[in-house]
Length: 152
Image 1 (spheres, rainbow, N blue to C red):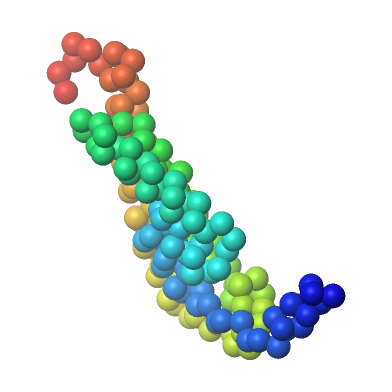
Image 2: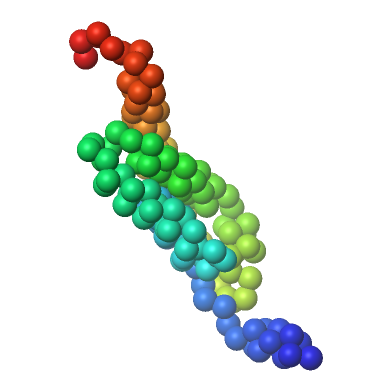
């Protein structure tokens, strides 16, 4: 009985309307902290934020905060943000509304905004990903001693 009352009270309330453009932009820029998860009301939105904060705090304990496994592990939530930004930006408005705005009563009509966010995400994501891969390779080669004796 209590579950039925809860379902009826949810059905009577209007769900908040979420913007596809804002979700894509948050995923692209602040995806490392899961900002788009918070905005979309996903369960366990605190997990990516906690992971990123822990990795950044742990990275501060090393001599060089940018050249250690804790900082390099941040590529996981960063890539998640870039991939989800592209998904949000390039999927049709009907897909986004069906998934994230089922009870809002409004529809997204985005136009060119998500396309521009997808272009920004592609350039930003590609640059960050190539840079991160290079940092990981140099870190591994240095840690294994493969670069010993070479002038860099």
